[in-house]
Image: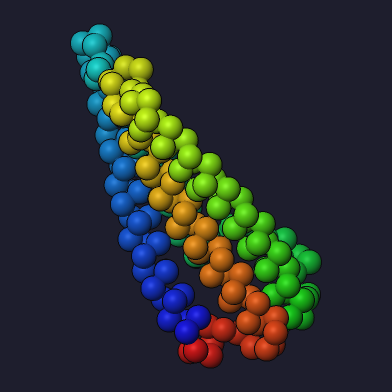
Length: 171
């Protein structure tokens, strides 16, 4: 069961990260075009700052779940590689619990802020984009990160209790 959920989450987070990278590519195109236009004619793209901020924020928050799922975050392997499988699982559980608490807090408080932005009808300063556009990728990405980190916690809890890898079991 854990291995199946791992495959599903890996595919989902990979797809979401690709969407995030498309937003990053859009930010690069807008930035480059803006610089070229300012150099060539003195006038850039109106509202480019709003668009670039939205795209970079979207790219970041849609990529974070994949980084968790891919285990791309930094670990102090000098110490942990000497641990037994269960001790290593315990440290991974601690890291996953902390990451989960952090990402769930971002999702929760981001959701509350998004509701407030909807209620107030706030718009971005230059382009006039609804601010909910900025909060939506934050809430979605951090919620997905929360799901991923809870899954990672469960995976390492299984290893800690049984002494076997949850992913190798095919369970």
